[in-house]
Length: 251
Picture (cartoon, rainbow, N blue to C red):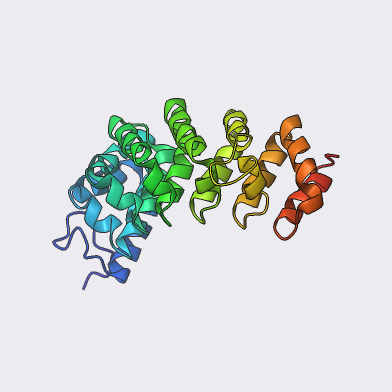
């Protein structure tokens, strides 16, 4: 009997979402030349969503995105667009969307990012969706990044104090063109208590990391001055922010 891995013309193509079949297919993708990759892609069209949702099949799609030329992976984005929000909140789907954001700029991929950005508030607070928004911030078009930052600034205390959303704010803080707006939002009057929004964030278990990141990227005078003003009363997580000032040589 032929012991070779099944090729694209085999009767069991595409393979069922079992571990062995998907491992063989991953290896085939990794070893294939562009012509065979194109043949594999053609055979998989119509099965993309099924594979993405599979514990094993999602790795096949990941290998395709990584190994094919960017202009040849648009078919994956075309099918993913139909279930953008589901995939963004799926443990495997969010991985695929992140890879596509990095490597694909097809019209359907732009629409995927637009859909995700329009639902930024919900996705930021989701355990998987927050990674998709982070990737748009890092790799997406400037107009979408600005829209996400506007959403974050509209409720800076809420997002910074959230387990998952704070990661999105922290990623945005690493983008220098986003930092001024985020600092401005932190320096506004608090919506939850006396003082400024920053005052509660420095002592927040999640927010303190955002403040530290802002200090690292842009130790702006007003930000530093406010932290110095708060320093005598800082304890717990607030001490980490104080240490960040010392570590950065900001006195």
